[in-house]
Image 1 (spheres, rainbow, N blue to C red):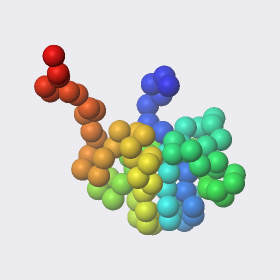
Image 2 (image 1 turned 45 degrees about the vertical axis):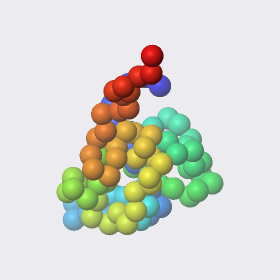
Image 3 (image 1 turned 90 degrees about the vertical axis):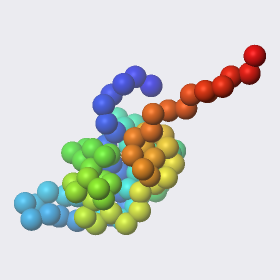
Image 4 (image 1 turned 30 degrees about the vertical axis):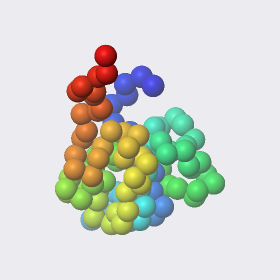
Length: 100
């Protein structure tokens, strides 16, 4: 997959902030705009997920302080697909002591 920056968000619910902008709520998933499924493989239409083009994936985490106000659960499989662990961005896997 080519580097595209940050994925957007698909969520099971929505709320409207004080400025009138729709924000994700409930369970959130990572999603590339232009595709019909989340990074964990859920079909957007069959799962009845709402798309949020204007919200990037890192904004849904509580420590970001962004659009995470009404987020109840972040998909673990989407976290893994984006390289985001529960403790922050992972560096990837490297073997430190390969066999001869």
